[in-house]
Structure formats: C-alpha cells, structure tokens
Length: 552
Ligand code: TEU
Ligand code: CA
Image (cartoon, rainbow, N blue to C red; front, top):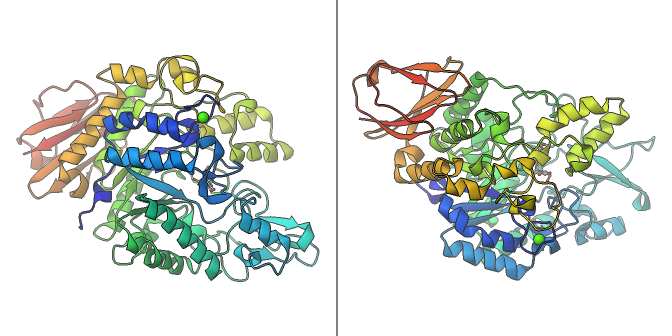
C-alpha cells in the first residue's frame, strides 16, 4: 500500500458558525477559529476540514453558495481567511475546503442570469425542464429536504431542479463551460495554498438523460448517475492531478461493492469517500427521522465490509458523526451514566481501525445531543421542513418532537462548549442557536484541567497512531465476529501486532484471549479504565471498556 500524508493524517471538521465567535455577534467566525488553532495543535490533528465559509444567504448554513470566491460576511473577510490559512500552515495544520458544486444558491449571479431568459448564456448552467401537459412537475423526483425537487419559474415557464432546498438549484454538469468555471474556481483556492477538498454530494452531479421517474431508487438516475465517473476523472485530470492535495467525497448511497470505483488508486478519481452505511443504519430510506436502532453486529459488518472491499485498492475514511448527524456519544454510546467511558471507547474504534479518522468539533470533549424540546430552538432547514410537512399530513406535535429530538442535525450544531461561563464561552451574546445546557459540566476548560478527560484520551490516540505505522498501514483481522457485545480486531504490520478490544455496552463481559496469543507478552498502550496485568486467559471488561495492547 502506497504511503501518503493523507492516510497518516487525522482530520478535524469545523462547522464555523458554531465554533467560536470572536466579535460578539453570536455567530462563529474565521477569527474565532484562528484563536483556537493552538488548541487544535495541542489535540494533535493534522488537517482541518472547514465546512463552507463562502458568501451565502444561509438557507442551508452555507451549503447554498452565492459567490465561490468570496467569504460570508458573518465569518469575516478574505484577509481573515488568508491569515487563517497562514496561521494554520505555520502550525503544520492543513486546510480542506468544502466544495459544494452539485448546486449553488439561487442568489448566485449565474442563477440570476439563468432565470433572466431562456436564451441567456447561463440558462444551461442549471437544469431546466418543461412542465408536463397538465402543468405539473417534469417528473416524480423528491427533494432531500421535502416536497418535489422541481420549482416552477413563472417568468420563463419552466421548472428548475433542486435536490435540496428550492434556494439550492442544481448545477448542470452536462455543460462544459460550467464545468470549466468550477475548475477555475477550484484552482483559485488551491493556488492560494489550501490542501484539498471535501466534496459535498459529489455523486449526485450526473443526472440521467431524459430525467426518467424514479421507480424504487434514484441510484443510477441522480445518484451515481451515468456520467459521474467521467466528471470525477475530468476534475482529477484538470485539477487534482496538478496539486499535492487530498480529496474526500461525500457519497450517500454508495455500497461497499461500488466504493472502489471512486477511490481505487489506479482509477484517478478520489482519495477517499464518506460512505453512509453506518449513518443510514436504521434502514428507513424514506424517513431518517424514524427509528434509530442499531445492532453491534451491523456496525461490525459495515466496518469489515468496507475494509475488505477496499483492501489493497483504495483508502477508507472513518467517522461516526458530522454536522448532519446526531452526536456519536449519544447515538452509539451512552451520554448519561457512561458518557466519558463510551466516548473514549468509540474514539478507540475510529482511531485504531484502518482508514483516515475524522473528528467532528466537540467530539473530542464528548459533547452530546442537545435534544431541544421546544420547536422554537431548532434552526435546521431539514428539521423545520420535515416538521411542517408532517404537521400538514396530520402527525401530532408530540410524535414529531419525539422523532426530531434524537435525529435533528441541530444536535451537532450547538456552540462548542469552551468553558462554564454564559453561552458556554462561545460568545458574549445569545448565540444563533442555543448552547447545550450541559456546558457547565462538559466544556473544554474542564477537559484541559482533567488528565482523565476525553480530550487527553483523543490526544493519546492520535499520538499512538502517529508513532505506530501499524495503526495506519497494518492489515486487520476481526476476532469473534458473532460476539454481540465486543468489537475486537488485530492490526499487523511486519512484526508489529496490536490487539484492540472494545466492549460496546453497559455491562460486564468476558474476552477470551485467542489461542495464538496465549502466553505472549501483552503491553497495554491505551485504555479507558485502570488496567491490571493479564493473569489469565480471560479478560473481564467493564462497561464500555476499551483496551489496546501490543503483543510480542
Ligand atoms: O449533505 C448531503 C445529504 O445527503 C444530506 O441530505 C444528508 O443526508 C442529511 O443532511 C442528513 O440529515 C450535504 C451536506 O453535508 C449538508 O449539510 C447539506 O445540507 C447538503 O449536502 C446540501 O448541500
Ligand atoms: Ca462572529
């Protein structure tokens, strides 16, 4: 396996709106990030993925971009950005920008032009279609954020496509001028010195000709569409291949059996993708707000499937939450009695499996879901649209709140809890979204004062991975596949052997040392409890216990 910096890196995702407010307007900003670079350096991360900071009317918090080469007013100026980039680089931290080019904002000048008339040169930068004979939408495609994916435009008598909100019109990747403008824009940022891109829903760029109705699944129609590989290969040739950079594509609805098509090192497409098998686990393809159960068996299957299917071909990314998902300790751990233990256990999985680990801001101090129980506290457009749509369908308020509380994207978007002062030390004024009231106990200041905190555990994991190439490049063998409580595997590179044992639940369980390791020397490297010498062939694990041993 080829060795490269982005395989060895640990990435930290910043959602700038919620990270740190430097000028007391209640909104996080670029100068706020600069203030905290030393904190990130202390944690030990190598790369920051910045969620969008471009000019935007914020219908979807910056994922609706109105100018790709300017900075959002609330976040600062281009000078601030340049300073952020320099200050990060000075500390050896790289920066990935979010590349959101499946769609842009309806306030982008291209779209304004596009709307002005059917023969405007920019008309074809977007996806326009005639109404059906009865005036209705061109087909049955739905927006991810509710309702039809088509919006009628009175003045020109056609519909435009928007897979997300109606303020996020889809760009037309069939149009070569449009593609070239995008590549030019990407080079503008790369020439400034950024280190790569996280690519928003890149596998939706290609839409099937003729826009056929979706029967059971949009796969092959507007997800993983017919020309997607042509587009990614072209982008690679025109842009990626010219820089030392990293790429990670956000790829909903890509099964592990297809993953290699995007990341195979011989295909010249992307370095990594984010797959959603784990995030979509409850398997309600039509409604993410319903049900959020998961089984350890499925978690193991997913991790192993992706490991096996990409083995020796391409590289994996590892994450259990981001700005669109509930907090990982709340979803996969126990955010009440075992918050610290379970946050550490989950982190152990992400940092000892094979792939590049991604930390979502606040995860490193074990931040939890906020579970707002008043609709007026919610800000996310997906959540608000869902609530409205379902209320109109007659679902009760109580039922909806029950669904939204554990699943809403706002769980990930509350301000970072810096200390126990008002507004969690995020801002002196009321923030754009309320802080989680648990900031009095859970905050960075406290974490830094406590040597047993989740923070220092992350620091240790990151350091361990950096110092031991086996954790990056070593192969991986699952142990006890059918065990319902324990996730355990062995990493191996040449003579180095590392055993990882993770108890996923709040009960005591036993782990039997496999025959081939009996009698060997076990050196404990990482653990979230005090650990005694091993004196028998059975290890008793406490609730959510995690252990990492070197065996020799
Ligand atoms: O998300 C893509 C996506 O597929 C979402 O619908 C995701 O499944 C959903 O947010 C889960 O609740 C990306 C961005 O990460 C997201 O923040 C944006 O809203 C979206 O694209 C549109 O740009
Ligand atoms: Ca601010």
